Image (cartoon, rainbow, N blue to C red; front, side, top):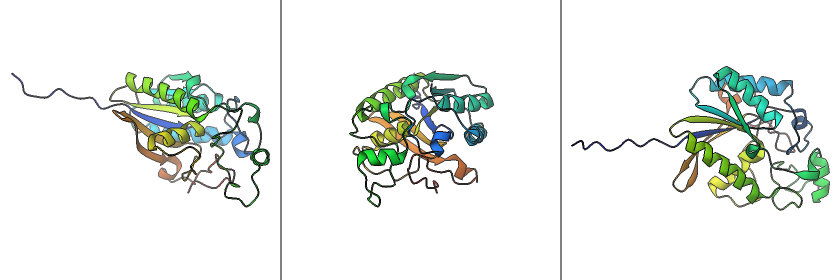
Length: 231
């Protein structure tokens, strides 16, 4: 009788990728569910991402069905010869009446004084703001889809092209950070987080900025009102 233990397939590795740049990113406008497309720089960023991801084998590409994410995924998919599967479950947080507003308008609404610790602003943080999708609702729909994708691709790598708010709150929940805690990492277009589902929940394997790894100029953190480079 064989004493060789049964092989155990590792859980899927989910590569969460923020979409390429849009005009509203540059204008510091809140996008939410608004169907904004990539701009010229965003298309270029998507091609750089495609070239980077072509170095390894991916089993599938999932994406938010909003144009900026779906376009990014299509460019990557063409390079990897993979069809893109889209879903509304991977969309950015729904921001209702605030969509299209600039950070200056949001700062005024929230009563943030110039020079205060909140003045630079985290455009992905909407904890406790009335009229927007809650942190809990956002994480529940993200997690539900990530669990489903993970179950379908055991032992494989999968690209998930999504949004800054989705990535930020995924990291928050995986690391157990309290809602509203300051974000001390960049959410540049193209920023990538690798998650893996384990017995106690999702585990953060890595966070990487493809532009820095490939020796390109540091990308701008377009989820911060100050618009600082990511490094």
